[in-house]
Each structure stands twice: as structure tokens, then as C-alpha cells.
Length: 80
Image (cartoon, rainbow, N blue to C red; front, top):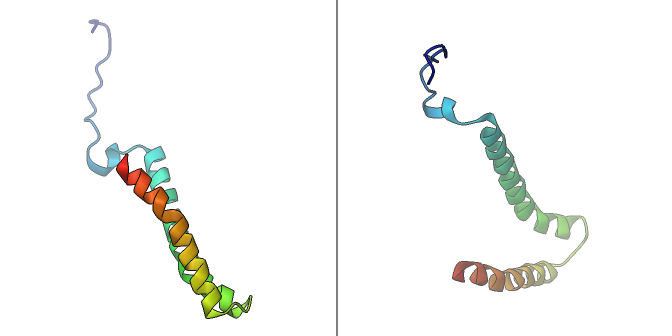
């Protein structure tokens, strides 16, 4: 450091103020995506039955096939 260089005497940010605004924005985006995903998962069977007229068997088969499709992918990601 040079002698002529001004010294920054402000204390360093601590706690929540130390987190950059971009990280806060990404956190809120992630929160809202999780909320919307949970809403869709809970309302999709109701929509299929009431609006599209699907039977309970059709909804059950759709859910089982989606879980069967996702299970190998989850297991592969856990193995690595």
C-alpha cells in the first residue's frame, strides 16, 4: 500500500448484509419455482379429473408411469 493511498475505514459488512443482491435474487427465484412446482403437483390430478374428465385409474397410471420414468434417473444421480 502506498502512503498517498486513502484507507477505507468502513467496517466490513457482516451477517445478511454481506450477501450480494444477486444471491438474494437467485434465492427468491428458487423459492418461487419450488412453490409453483408444489402447487402444480398437488393440483394436476384435480385438473385431470374435473376439467379433462380423466378417470381415477388414468390419473393413477399417469402418476405411476412418471415415477417409474424418474426413478432410474434419481438412482443414477445418487450413484455419482
